[in-house]
Amino acid sequence: MMKNTLQRANQAQQELKKKVNDRFYPDFHLAPPAGWMNDPNGLVFSRGLYHAFYQHHPYDENWGPMHWGHMTSRDMIHWQHQPIALAPGDEYDRDGCFSGCAVEDNGVLTLIYTGHVWLKQPGDDSAIREVQCIATSTDGINFSKQGVILTPPEGIMHFRDPKVWRQDNRWYMVVGARTQDNIGQVLLYSADSLYQWQFERVLAKADSHSGYMWECPDFFPLGDKFMLMFSPQGMKAEGYRYRNLFQSGYLLGQWQPEVDFVVERNFQELDSGHDFYAPQSFLAEDGRRIIFGWMDMWESAMPSKEDFWAGCLTLPRELTLDAEGRVRMAPVRELESLRKDRHSLEPISLKNQRCEFDLSVVTGEIQLTLDSKNSDAERYGLEFAAGESGQCATRLYVDNQSRRLILDRGQSGLGVAGYRSVPLPDDDLLELRIFIDRSSIEVFVNQGESCLTSRIYPPAQEQVLRLYAENGHAQVIQCTHWTLGCISK
Ligand code: FRU
Image 1 (tube, rainbow, N blue to C red):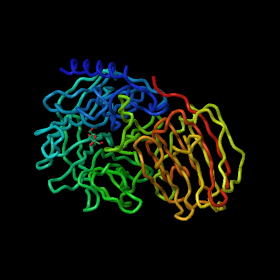
Image 2 (image 1 turned 30 degrees about the vertical axis):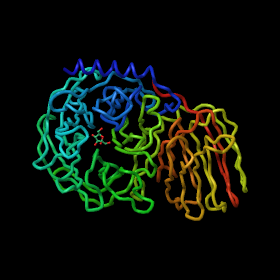
Image 3 (image 1 turned 90 degrees about the horizontal axis):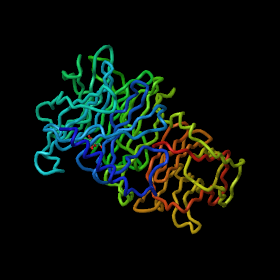
């Protein structure tokens, strides 16, 4: 059954690929060859290869019956597209192979995912059936479905996104759930074998402010804590926080098998930009905890749909716990191997001025250090992809009065708008690492203390990068730009 549906899906993807226009297609982020992508799935390092699967609709550029797209890499940086790994169509996953994870079970690469069925109309969330399913592969490329391994507890309908790990000789699984009275939860299961699961406990659940459904849970040790990462639906905006349709963040606390999770740090957002959702973690070959997120948000404008593709993933980011017990998120060091064509500015003091870089392409990486203690300009920072006319610009600047770093995409091109911001760090220096791809920007602030990630859609022909200071001085200590090589075949 799956062989035919997979063949059809792969053919459809290849046909669609012929129509893809690559004006917004990323150079150094993972994206589908054609069609739709959402959550990263099944991230794993197995037998010398990194695998990244993803929610994929190969028939067109819109979300639809979910397949699992697949890419592999030897170094976590350069990726190769592989045939589609899972296609829906069996009775238990008839309408979608939803998000899930991958583990190695006695040398067998194993995918654990949610089988989704609409019980009324497609898209009607009030009547669905969701169960956890399994598929295995001996070559890491071709998978065969093995059926259902877990059904929901009594009264629970929304029951998805299993994440499995091994600890003390036992398998554990967290699953996202929504109760009948619309409370988001994470359920914990354990097993001797991946085929037979036992309910352990509700690991964590929402209060009245923190969401009706918790999607994509992931639970892992970080430093001397356990981190529960998840993507709640239904949190309301509070001032500068929770501004997107849905959020992604974490709780930190203490945990060991057979006891409750003791939360020590309440919900924190992982990224404050417009487009970051459903992150999933995995262990790098050397044990670093890395995540990829989906670099979009439901209901965002996605102008690349006109080009027959939509959706991409963030850069791989390493999570660490700092001395103050805060989670930091920084691009993995392997990305430095993509750097070429370095341009650097001498330290400079700008006064009511704009200073332009001499670059043929703006996309790439920028390291910028600003002396935020000794800069008195009302606004200072960077603007890019601004045409000569100044008509279209993405701005990243310090607003000295609110003491915030602002990412403003009010003029970032087709269909996107609004701004997001983070507080300035306490330090005297503001150290930014900025990655600009053809339709995205990621900003890492002071060694990953905070992050801003947003999609932008600037016209390709307008490639300008400027530093600026308005109404006062800005002290630029360092500014370096590299172009970055392409990552996928
Ligand atoms: C998160 C999510 C998951 C689900 C998948 C479906 O973005 O809604 O909960 O498994 O996407 O594509």
